Picture 1 (cartoon, rainbow, N blue to C red):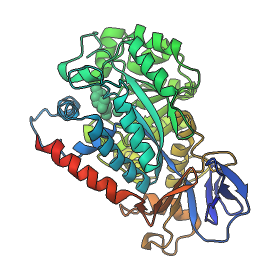
Picture 2: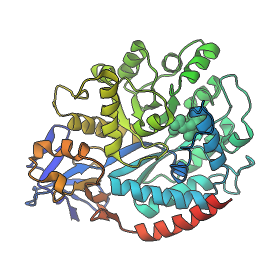
Picture 3: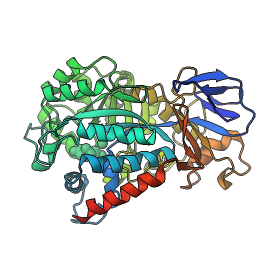
Picture 4: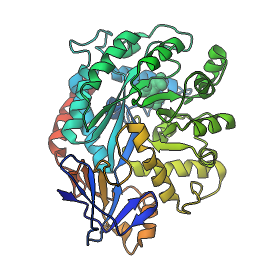
Length: 446
Ligand code: NGQ
Ligand code: ZN
């Protein structure tokens, strides 16, 4: 039995001193008397969007190749990089990434996985070899995983064939459903399998409908949507509607849906997503890195929309930085301060934390994001001895955590009741880092 060693627990209603929990043998929370220590404990943060392999190229797409550099030229660099990955290198990179995520306070990751086949597009002997590499990395590090095999069929809205570099992403719907079905048999308390459509660009309408009809009722459904203006224009030209508008009109969008990015929205689309109960996965640092645009956060909060954050391309692996820059983007756009607040709290940090935790359960399919009886025993303990917290009252602890810079203030992390980070360090970080270094030497040498 592991007891949450904290006097203050973060709950949807704010800090509570009178609650205590232990983890039972199945990794779930059981209520107990509160502990006498003085620490602050917060539910582990769900990471709603990850392409693990991209971690290994962070910082390697930051040279100008052309004055017109954009999302689309970055994508070519990313494809070249993706073409070198193997199941072993994906395993090594994902394990390093997941250990870093845990140290940063992410305890569940939604892996939006489309790198399925060999570089020539042929399935591996085990068609789920890449999925298995990701599952192995999650098991090795102890992070909770929502694996989202991605359906990727065409190279654009006009239905053109996949380009040479996209070939290893592709499936027909039958092979895709077989992959899903096989992976679902491997589900456990630490692994959920959902479903993803890469984007409206990459999935023809009929294929999307065929897969939706065959999906189990409890699978979360993730999709990239409306990230780039070019994509919005192509969607209008070929489907007669903007991406979010099209999706809301052609699918039963409900709380099972996670709309990744959803950057470019009209007021009607903002309202439409919020009313549907879908979650928007905002990937602040990647959206900044790729020059996507700014999500209309204030309007979306006013509409009562659900949202969370993801580290996506992993040019940053820090929930603190995702949340802080989500607010800063809004400040830079409006030239005001303290924008993400809600009637429950005038604190920006608390509003951001509350929002992203509330997305956990729908987006991941795991009972995460809230410390309550029966939920997953996933929590992080803040380093209350750090100078940033000196003299700080509990009421200011979350703002201090999010708005005091880049020193990691996460001291301990438990997932399913098991301590995987102590004193800020993942318990097998050295072995994982050694393998990662060897892998990167090879990857970057050819
Ligand atoms: C991806 N990433 O699939 O990795 C995408 C880029 C695309 C982001 N959208 C490729 N951030 O959208 O076609
Ligand atoms: Zn993505």
